[in-house]
Length: 187
Image: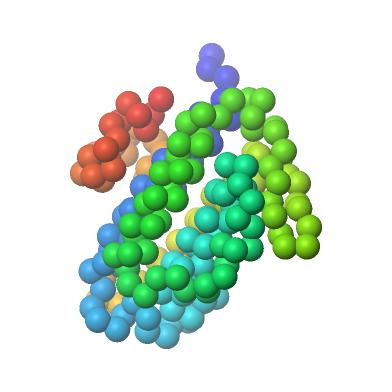
C-alpha cells in the first residue's frame, strides 16, 4: 500500500498553483479595455489590485523560501503591474521559482527553518508551514479573481481539476505551453 509522501504533495501543489495561475491570467488577458482595473466587490476592489497582491506576496514568500532577504521590499510598490501581460510574465517567473524549489524538497528540508525578513524582525517558521500558507493564500485570492470575472465579458475559467490523473484531458494544451508533461505533473 502506498504511503503518504509530503514531498510529492507539495510538488503537486506547486504545479497546480502554476497551472491555475496560467489559466486565470490567460482568461484575464481576454478582458475588454477597462475591465482589468474596473471597481469590483471583493477584498481588493479590482482584478488588477488582487492579482498584483498575489504576485507581491509570492515574491516575499518565495524569496524567503529560497533563503533570500528581500523581505518587505517585495511590497514597496502596491501595484507593480498596470497590464495583464506584464503581470502574467512576472507571475510565471515566480511560479517557476516555486516549482523549482518544490522539485528539490526532501523530508528534511520540509521541516527546516525559513527566515522571513519583516523589517524590524525575522520571523522563523517551518518550510512546510510556509508552503501551506502560500498555497492557501494563492487559492484564496485566485478565487476572488474568479468571482470578479463573473461580472466581466470573460467567463471564469475552471481552476480545480489539476491534481488527479483523470483530469489530464483538461490540461494538455496548458502543460504543453508550460513545457511540462503528464509524467512531470503526476510523479
